[in-house]
Image (cartoon, rainbow, N blue to C red; front, side):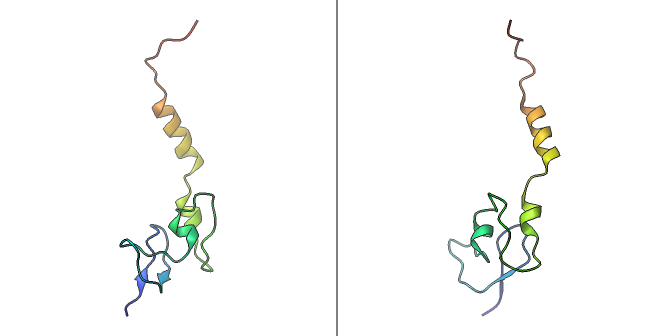
Length: 74
C-alpha cells in the first residue's frame, strides 16, 4: 500500500490509516484544523503554527468588514 499524505494543508506527515470521506489525517488536531492551536502529534511538524491565522491578518479582515457607509449614531 502506498503512503498517503495528511490532508492538513500545511502538514507534511504521512498517514498509515485508510482515508475516510476521501481524506486522511495523521492526528485529531490536523483533522479539526488545529482549532485551538493544538500541535501536530508528529515530532518536528509545525503545521499547527502555519495553520493559525496571523494577528495582522485578523486585524486587516476586521478593518475590511467594518461598514464605513453606516452613519455615526448620535
